[in-house]
Length: 157
Image (cartoon, rainbow, N blue to C red; front, side, top):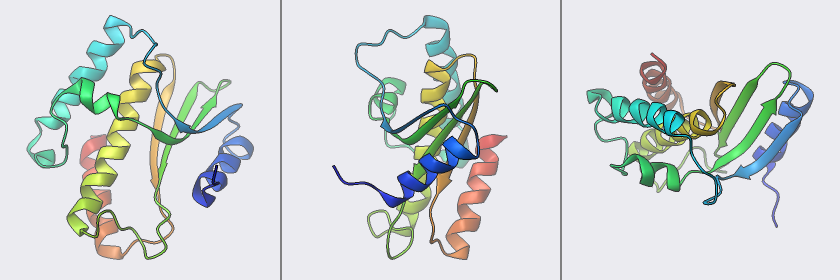
């Protein structure tokens, strides 16, 4: 098992700074977990709202909520059980900077998909927690950073 430096750094941060009592890397849902009808409906409504938004027209490859959630993995998940906070971090630690498939358009789509998938997944399984979803990378050019921040602002709204 290799240790990812970005995941290790964020794990320590969540434990020692955010006060997360539970921190796990590469968190995935189990296929054996039952989903509450209400939570699934709420998460699916959010998914449909974002997918149908013109600002995200080409951002998501999966067209169904179930396939979108099925492929979900959160790089580092932290639970602050005292403050009822979830911290979901997706991390790209690429040596040459943010680089998904060598295509700048893929960078924007990948980041938005990762952050939004983490939100939907957390909403589905952590009903009583406030969700905080982040994307971290140590090296990203200014133009992609602005594009990503703009889309994340729209997503947040």
